[in-house]
Length: 429
Image (tube, rainbow, N blue to C red; front, side):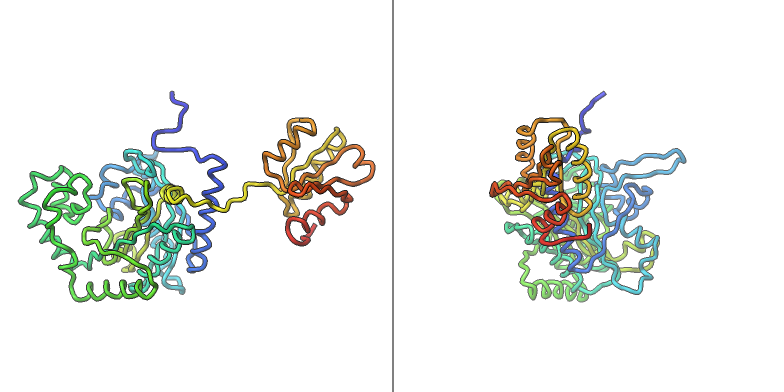
């Protein structure tokens, strides 16, 4: 029996967690400014949610899902992506009936995909994403893209590329599908086994194949942009016009199709161009998915969203040598010398904590010198010292570790004094 973490998973240790918490706080703040509300959904769903929502022809459904049967004989799946589970919740809880429309949501999710682990791509992965349900306005497409770009920009990333495409409406896709089948059919035997199946199931996904991407037929494949009907072309032009007004640069890629079946109209990816980032450059991807709510039993409700991998976001931050402003210090370290002082320290430490002061203390019975070393390791801003002499005089000594200044403070004034030093004022004691 192995006592190691399963392949494709990783422990996130305390020092690294601080980076995650900082990044997540920035993303949450941005969502608040864009007026998006957080949603939290179950870790697993009925398998049909993903079969119908993601698509039977996708690699996720065919190869990557962690599916199991529960004791009641029901087929359940650990969620491999976020959009289908959010849309399921939207339908089940009748959020389409909310007086506030569209419904604008964001989420942080742990997802599970059985794929070959590599740098920035794990079997248990963490995603941040947003979904907007209830509007077919192209300005919403631009807003969602702008939100994603804002997340990266406010975390300091600059080596970014936004790639844009349109997959068109149903009519446009059907016409393009016929053209793709005609184009790739003569080369069917030269394509990988997956693409041979895709030729009949969903030929658009051949363009997304990593195995056949260098096949000559890929370079001459018909472009979806040549098959957009008037409505789809006008819609795409409006999305681009909004991005231009926001001064968000982008490049067009007619082969950008995304890996899920539910996309239509706007599709986009954000990539890192940082030197040394790696072969897989995609940081985030998303697009419009009108029709998905109907597939999951709801009313006709247009939607658009994106998801970004948090592991890959942190990789991009490292690739651009960005130092996140994380304060790893503690406010105070309490040093108690003597049995009586130790008992009094527990009371004072608790009182400081419930009044908003971050405090730690020694729990190993170390001598004063060793406790000062512990305070240094924790980068304590202040050290509070309580011994027999201080107890007799009802005071503590407070040392500013930056200046070295030490002050006697009455025990009754300790909370108020530390609030003034650390919080800029008093709170309720």
